Structures are given as C-alpha cells and as structure tokens.
Image 1 (cartoon, one colour):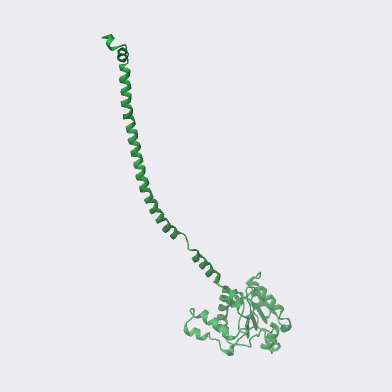
Image 2 (cartoon, rainbow, N blue to C red):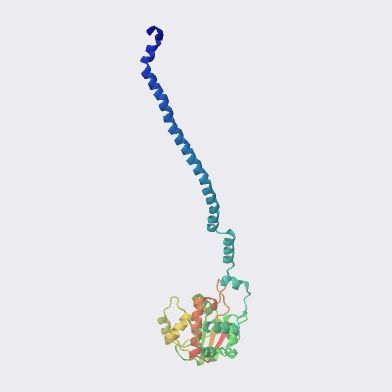
Length: 290
C-alpha cells in the first residue's frame, strides 16, 4: 500500500497539522476582518448621518445668525443722526452771536423779572414788582461812556453830592457782573465823580467785614460792585438804602462768551435777589440801563 499511495502520503500526513492550522487561519482571518469592515461601515453610516444632520443645524444657525447680528449691530444712519442732533444744540454764545447787539430797554428788564418771579411769588406780589415806565431813566444807546451816561441821567450831581451826609449808604449804586468789570467802570468815572468818594463792592480778595468798616467810617457817594456782595452788605445792615436815588445796571456789557449779566445763571440769581431788596426797601430810586 505504501507503493500505491506513493511517497507523498507521508508528507501530507506529517503536515496535516500545518494544513489544519492554515485552514483555521484562513477561516479566522475573514472573521477578524468582518467586524472591522462592519464597524467601518457603521462608522461611515454614523458620519454620513451626522453630516446630513449637521448641515441642517448649520443652515439653521446661519439663518438665525443674521437676525442676532442685526439686533446687536447699531444702524449707522441712526448714529449719524444722533451726532447731527448733538451738533445742532446751540449754546448761549451761539445764540447771542447770531443776534446783533441791541441797547437794553425797560421791557427787557421787566420780562426777565416776570419770568424769574412767576413761580416764586403770589399774584399780588408780582403786581407789586411790576416796574412802571416812570421808574426808568433814559437807557444807554451804546454810544455813551459811563461818565457821559451819568451826566445825562443825573445833571444835578454836584448838588446831590453836597447834600449827602449819611454814612453806610450811597446815592448811586452801579451793579455789574464781576470784580474786573467793577474796576473798569470805576476808571470810567473819573470825569463824572468830581470829589465824590467811590467804593468798590465785590467779594474778590476783600472781606465783607472790611467793607462794612469802610462804609461806616466815611461818606460814600457811589458804590460799584457785584449783586452778590451788595446783597450781602444789605442783609448784614452794612449798607443802607435810605439815600439811594439811582441804580445803574451794566445791562449791555457782554463778556468773552457774549453773555450779559442776566445770561449767567449764578449772577442772574444774585441780581434778582438784589432787585427784590431794592423794590421792598426803597421806593424812590430810579433804574438806568447802561
């Protein structure tokens, strides 16, 4: 039988284990590959489904994003409109610069008084504060200096000067907006005052007690100062109003910003309080708008 099978049978039998191993390897290999391919297919399917789902989300996000951005981003036209509106706001200086300066008149002062005391006084008190035309002197037509204006409204100044003998009082009070303006006006009085004594009545570098002593020591004919300090002197009884005959308001003068005395809120408040004291305590004085 050995001859019939030939020599190859031995080798096949001897290698039968190897053949079985190879067969097993061949069988095992596809089993190992199948889960890999299945897993890969599953992963591909998952990725495909995620890709299919993600574009929808992206599209939805892209559609929603502009709406959010439209809400957050300000309209450039609106910002320019706001800027234009802000630029259009005019200051007092702009308003006054656009108007030609005109000499003050009694109606100007009366309108300012009415507006200021409208909500502060009763109707009866407002009627008492109505300034009559007879209370006003000739107004400056912007051609006079202070001395020439005072000569016009007070032609009998020499006589009034001699008869004035009361201390802590003045015949003429000139009301202006600042200490510097006070000094300028006093310099302009040289050709009018004669031998009259002029006293500066402002708060800058001068204590009120010193001014009270100066008023008590000698006779003062003309007082020039700011409404705040003059009002304070009246309240402390350092300045009496019995001899007062003329109140001259530096009405037409304007500062660097083209503001008059009544255009500056702080000074206007002091001025109105001072005018109220004049009207309540002294009825014989006359008002001049310089």
